[in-house]
Image (cartoon, rainbow, N blue to C red; front, top):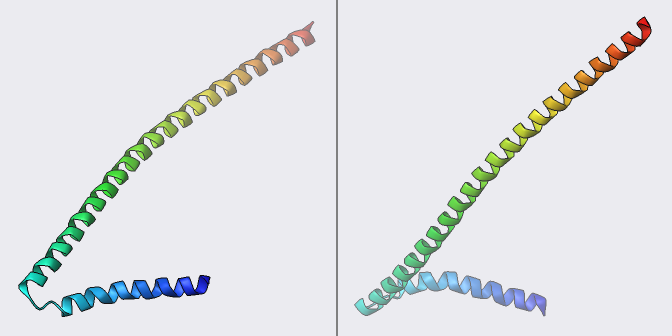
Length: 107
């Protein structure tokens, strides 16, 4: 059943591709040409609308990406500052401890 459905879909897809070629081969009158042209123009407009939507979506994604990249850099800088401050505090405490140790050994 699934294979039959798959084969039927393949036939329909092949039919659609062949139909466009046959349609252009079978245009015999001006009226048929006008209808074909009207159809093609409709497809062109639809494609352009889709392209514009995709382009807008891409621009929004790029803007969002840039903002996220900026936030990430700010967070990295903040983290580096905090790490430097923490290392400085450790150094100060080690120095204070060493002074206490040296002070107690002199007594």
